[in-house]
Structure formats: structure tokens, C-alpha cells
Image: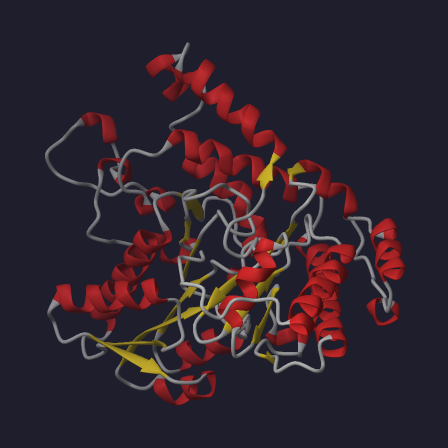
Length: 424
């Protein structure tokens, strides 16, 4: 598929947005998702929409493969090979090769494995390197896992939190073992220059571990080209794998022989059915596995990945930038009388596929939007997040979402006394 172009500068009316949708070569992909007609869904950066195929796939796995095939389905239905097969389908979306990705476990567990492996490699090279560098604004679980691993090892490792992206260069010094970053920041939507920061880490003797939770399926990623060392990510956001769907881990072939971590479950054994007492790691990416896999959840991930094969990340990126450009322009023009602050970078190279605005009553405004059928989400402090999934978000959705926001703000139709409940 060629890379589409979108003239959002001329989209000053709803009719113009409808015309963009009518001419959009990616528009038919929306038909492959189950989306309520009365909802504008701008939260695919937290949980992707359900592919239509997922329901039939779940029924088939439960009724036929489990119900009729029973234990035979580990072989006859290909259950045992699912983590690697899905990994190979996911690999092109993140710039990886076949045999470098497995879909398994959670993002947190995979990050633990990647960090443990990176620290072990560095301990062999230079045991004086004891620092893990990351951003203070990184997703909390990444910080928790890194800090927990450092404490558990009890060998002098420590976490260095950097207060701004500009401070990362100086923070990677002679004592740094690992630079651990999320490619697209979950609050702001700011995208790092993966190649440049990885090269900087390598020049200082550190390894680079990347979290792609807000990148995979949303922005082009080139792990091998950037010479990154390890990467992890989830499948339930832009990859539309379902709530709590298994995550993925990438280990490039150049690191696979040295990749080791303490979660040595039987699925990562070289001969899992030999039931031997000693552990011997599998060859290749299989050593990144751990225990028995959640087959039903894994099977649904495939439904989301299949849709990506009808397009390209370059085409999706073009639409993503057009959608987010339009949203920013409309909010700033049609809601100009209100105290909204753009948090997300304007520069395309620094922007993921979400837009974040602050408002003094951001939580209450977001609750009012959700009540009106425009689903985004909220993050402290005062940040309203709007995620744009080019597989199914329309330009008319952008117009209607901004008009709803304008109406709520103009009429102050939000309750600042509302109790703050969980907004995922």
C-alpha cells in the first residue's frame, strides 16, 4: 500500500472531515472492528477495540480446540507454538526479524527478564557498572520493576531517575549499566529518538532497553536498525489483543546466546518434556519464555495482528499524524477561550499517536466527555489523554469529539465535585 496523504489544513468543517474519510484508503479497516455506533473511542492507547474476528476465534478455541480437541490441541491446534508464531507476525511492526520476538507473560515480567539479562551481560563485561538510568516520568511499573530488581539483587545496583529528556545524555555515565526508556511517554505522547539515544548509550558503554507499550502498532519502530539491545511491549493497546492480553519481548539474535534471566520456567528449557532436574536454556528466542502459556488470550492476539497485514506502518503513521494534527488545530481554534494547555509535542518526530491537554478541571471534563460518548482518559496532573488509532479512528470522529469538548467547556457542563474513580 502506498503512503496516503491527508490535507487536514482544509478541514475547517465537519463536511470537510467527512470528505477526508470518504477518500481515506485506510477507512475500510474500521469495518474489521466492533465499535458501538454512539461512541467516539479515543482510548485505544489504553485498550484497543475488539476485532470482529476475536469473538469467533474465542468460540473456536474454547468450543472446538479445548472442548473437542482437549489436550491433543497442544499439538493438533498448534497451541505450543503460539508464542513464537505470534512473535513472528508481530516482528515486522517493530523492525525485528523472525525468531526474535515471542508473545508471552506481561510487560512487567518481560521487562524484568530484559533488565536481568542486560545487567548480567554488563556484569560480565564491567562489574563496576551499577546504575539503571530512566526518566522520572516513565510508566510507574517500569520504575517499580527496575527498583525491585536492583533491591533484590542486593549488589549495589541503583536506579537513577532523570527529571527531563534533556538530562538523559549527561545521566548515562561510566557507571551506567542500562538505559531503560519508554519510546512514547504514556502521559505526554512525546516520542524519543530511539536510534540516537541507543547510540549514545552504546558510546558510553551502556545497553539500551526499550518499552514499546505506546509504540507498537501506533508508530514505526526499527529495533534492529536502531541497534537496540532489548525491547518489551504490550498487545492490548494499539495491537488490539484484548484486555490483559499477553505482552511481547524482543531479543535480537546477537544477544540470544548471552540472554539469561532468573525466571527459568519449563517452557524456556531446551527439552521441556525431558523433565530433567537441571535447567538448560533453549536455543534462540525460546529462552525468553517462562511457564505454561494462556492459550485463549494468546489466540485472540492473532486477530489483531492479522489486520495490520492489510496495511503498513508507514501508511498508519501518515494517518495518525493527520488525525493528531487536526485534533490539535481544532482544539486550539474552537476551544481557544478556555485554559487548555498542549502537553504533546507539535513536531512530528517527537509525537506518538496520542494528544494530551491539561485543564484545571481535567478529571471532571473527561468524565463529562465520557458521559457524552467521547471516551478518552485522564492522568495526573490535570492531563486529558486522547488516543488516535488510525486503524479505526475517523476524521469526523475528531471533529465531533472537539465539538463535544467545546460545548462542555462553553457551558461548564462538568462536575468538579465528582469523586475520582479509576480511569484506565
